[in-house]
Length: 262
Image 1 (cartoon, helix red, strand yellow):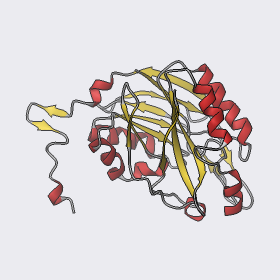
Image 2: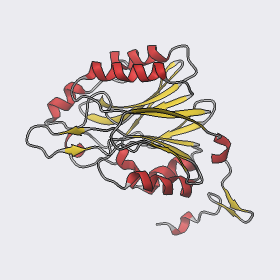
Image 3: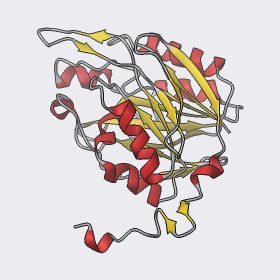
Image 4: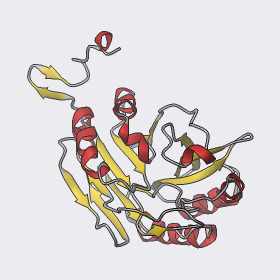
């Protein structure tokens, strides 16, 4: 199958221009699975919970979700988009999965980073795997990468590909995803953003780019630059993620000894 990411710099508070850029990327992409960054509709550096609420969207009933559904309609394509989601009396930092028949599901970020803890509630969806036909995919959002249990939970549930919308500011994740892929023998698509945000009296946030696709053997199939937008697609053999054998004597998942892990 053909998978990819769109690395760009969302404009803070400019939902419709960001949606327009997302739809242009969808229209220009030829493949089966496309991943966009975290909070791709709103931007990242909120100044208040009220501001975050104003820029959040209703899932799946809101007009933004419907615009993306319409862009995909009739195509054999699934997309993953990071966004701020309105819940019941709270907000979630979420990623939605949309396919040829419309909305498929939502993952709400489990591990919140930095000031996200001021605006969002920790996710309550758990780690779910969706079968999209050519592959089974699981969703992570940005700082979830820091917790190996997140990727392992998805691998244990059968994920072939980890879709990873991100707004990375720390330098470690691109290399760490190599380890996540090795230790679970899965593909990973990290879609990060580029650019800077410095709002109010807050310190400047500089996003590192370096979006990437990593194979189950840890090989980086492609890594984007740290500064330039990029729409990228790569052909992958999903069956590589389904053989968990390391050698004739060891199976990555069957050899686990969970009784000793607590």
